[in-house]
Length: 98
Image (tube, rainbow, N blue to C red; front, side, top):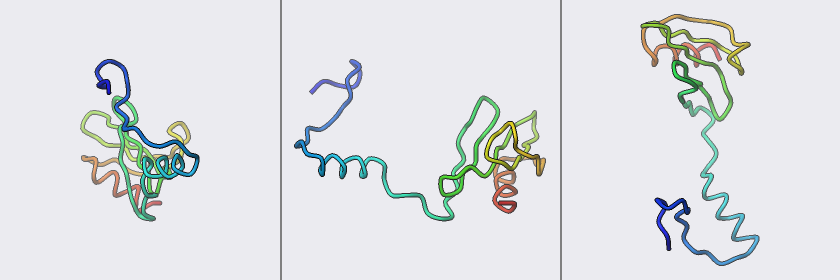
């Protein structure tokens, strides 16, 4: 088995079959997010996207020391709801507003 450093994927051999393939795909994706699971991921150099249960609830843009929380599903249409000094506070404002 070749290593991932040569451009090949590191995959364990599995028997072929449609049912097994579906089971492997479901296992790779993992369980669906909990109803109240909140994720914060970097969206750009100075912005983050905040999701709850896989649905975008808003964005946080960093402007100097200020974190600007904007509610909406797309960054270009989101509405500013708060300006705070740290990321956790900005995320909490988005959660409270959602």
